[in-house]
Amino acid sequence: MNIVLVLGAVFPVSKYGGIERVVWYLAQSLSKQGHAVTLLAKAGSECPFAKVIFIDERKDWNEQIPATADIVHFHFDPDANIEKPVVYTIHENAPASSTFHKNTIFVSQNHAKRYNAQAYVYNGMNWDEYPGAILNNERQYFHFLGAARWRVKNLKGAIKVARQSKQELHVLGGNRLNFSMGFRLTLSPKIKFHGMVDDEAKAKVLNKSRGLIFPVRWNEPFGIAITESLYFGCPIFGTPYGSLPELVKVDVGFLSSSSKELSEQIANYKHYRPVRCYEYARDVFNADAMARQYLEKYEKVLNGEELNASNPKLVPYPEENDLPWR
Image (cartoon, rainbow, N blue to C red; front, side):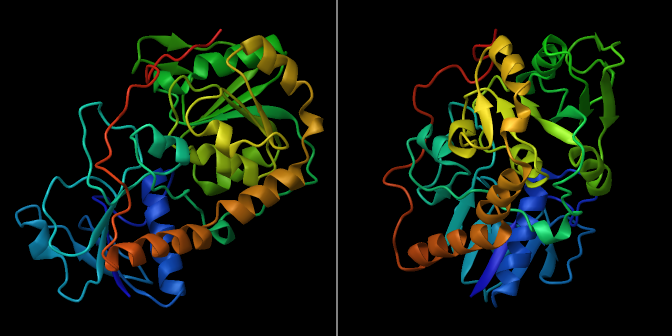
């Protein structure tokens, strides 16, 4: 099958790059499974396992898609009529006014349900490219992983949980002084900030962590921070919003909107086995499984089927931001 993956980014990424990383691993796995893959990406991109075409913003999308393409997979909504068979993955929460093509795919069951859709595929990583998980390591502290400047990620809540339980917290993805969402200065020496980190630095922190504190206050579409933490043997302590109830099973974490309950539960972190967390992430949220599920969607579209019964559109749902937290 000739597959074109489209994302307006430069490949490969050097640090976080959540969506970019997912598309890269998808291209890699599809190629490994014998398919011809083309990345339609920003100038400067390069890839050893797929052909790369630079996006030309002066041209119509249909002019840039190779004639040999069997199917085109956009990782955003291009707001254009694509002439080739096409699917779209929406990775984030879209504005309430958005209406999507029937062949739109979401990244969790909850994500799809909130848009009155049925099609979803979990994000998967190529764990072989990650530094090794050390599952018998001494675990010393907890961690927060995510864009700390986003209020909905609730770093403030994670710090509260760590303080209430008298635990040290390492923050990846944020700085001690932050002006982006109002003034925030965290003075406690038990809260350590690492800023944006690469895979090696992230693995070094996560391999010694007792668990991820993740009290998001929005409907999280998926949460790569969750699966990466699990891979390094870290259970998840978060809020029951968005995809978390379907991703965080009872043997790999605990969910509550109460800081008191989360604080009490992280004291029992030894109840959760690092090897179980690791195996769950490795077996369920891997790039090959993701690629196989996307291939099933491609086949359906090529056979003339539509992936959703109607055009996905956000249905009335609890408020997206500032969901309950106490």
